[in-house]
Structures are given as C-alpha cells and as structure tokens.
Amino acid sequence: MRPGLALIVAGVAAWMPPAALTAAGPTTTITVRVYQSAGLTPALEQRALEGAAAALRPALVEVRWRICTGPNRSTACDRRPDPSELSLRIVPEGSPGWNASITLGTAFVAPRVGGVLATVYFGHVERLARETHTDVAVLLGRAAAHELGHLLMRTSAHPSCGLMRANWTQKELQRNRPPDWAFTGGDVVAMRHLSPGH
Image (tube, rainbow, N blue to C red; front, side, top):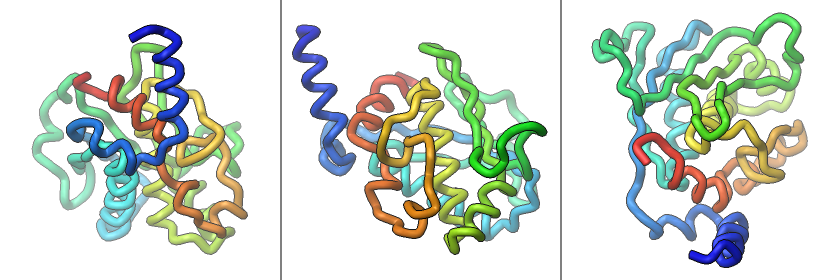
C-alpha cells in the first residue's frame, strides 16, 4: 500500500465506530491474569471484569480472565505466564506522591515493544465513583479496559476522544454518553496490528 493511501485509510479508520470494523477480521483472544489486593468482593470483581470485557469486545478482543488471588484462584496461576499473557493488578492506592485525585491506573509500556502489566487503583476509582454517583464496578471495568488498551496498542499515548482519552471529567461520567466509553475505530486498528500474538 502506498504511504499516502495508508495515511488516508488510517485517518478514516480513526473516525469509524468500532461496530463498523467488526467485519474486518477475526476476534483476537487474550489471556489476562488478575491479581487484586484491594479487598474486592468476588461479586464486585466479577462485575468489573465483565464490564472490561464488554468494553473490549467491540474492539474485536475477547478476554479470558485468569483469577490469581482469592477463593476463585486459578491453578494455572502457578505456572509461568505465556509470553502473550497480560497481567492486571487491582491495588488499593497509587504510589506516594502521585496525584490520587486523577490517576486511576497505569500501564507500563515500552515504545514499539509493549508491556504486560496494567494496574488500577481501586481507592481512586471508588472515590471518583462516589463523587459522581457512578457505579463503582462500571468505573473499575472502564479503568481496567483503558489500561489493558495501552498494553494491546503498545503505547502510553492518549487520543482526544473515546475510552482511551487521558482525562475523564465528572461531567462526562455523569452524562454517561456511550461514545465516551468506547474504543475508537483508530484504537481498534491499532489493536488488530499490535495485540499479543500479532
């Protein structure tokens, strides 16, 4: 494909809703190990993970969760992770000195190499959910999907719209418009080319 045409196609894809791309190819299945030390109940953890999976599904990504802590712990967690496996940590708080009011999570990503570890700070999510009268499981699932999105796209960059934008305002959370909580067409294209196994 000529470079100019590639740029045009990529530009168009950035504006397409993920649903328009679902016929573009098969779904990618990823395995994510989940480690949580935030004291979540199994029901809250399950609802949050279901929400994260639902956010990733329109982006042609199916998630197999491997629970590695708590009463439902998978024995597969005793084995060394496969190279394509990702890990999600749900911890109580961020590192000291971080701006707790705005940092819901982090993903450690090396440019063009990627990463395997995403972290969500449950205490920060819980406070924001309380302030905005948002379901904490919904917000936790969105935060997890956002951080896993960084790993799948191998970038720490943030677009200006959609689930991968950098800042989530209280007004946006209260308004709860579906496009604000979905991956964009451009995100989907990036995941198709860079997700584990590709």
